[in-house]
Length: 169
Image 1 (cartoon, rainbow, N blue to C red):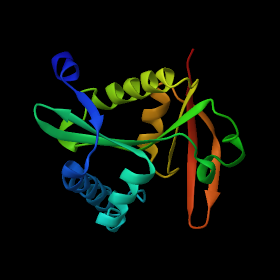
Image 2 (tube, rainbow, N blue to C red):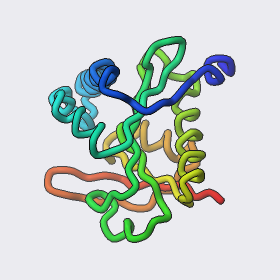
Image 3 (cartoon, rainbow, N blue to C red):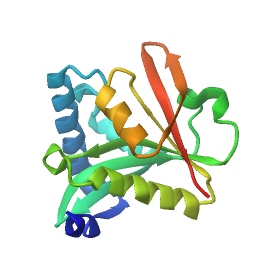
């Protein structure tokens, strides 16, 4: 397992890899839909949406052994979800974290979270924040196990999210 984690490479997505990453998100959304997890829908990941992600966030791909096995996006502000808690420049926000199902249990997700922490520190941030739909019990538990503190719940029109953050020095 350690040798897989040591070979994981995270890099910024460019236009040439966008379709591969889009396929990965659609595959993950299809799995969630099949399991009754109301988090992502296959229809969410249109080509237009993916191009917006690459323009509006820092979109990354997780590579291993020459293949894209995951993805994530980083934002430096998130007033829509974090509302009044997004009032300073101390946090960075992780969204759209995905790892292919076949790599489940190998520690890839934790590796990506550690990379995000290091990236936040490198950019002068003290907090890594993320959110998760309340009904995805296993994912909520995963973030707590990974050291994130539950910071509350927020709601918008047609959605709700549990808020998590991890502080570091």
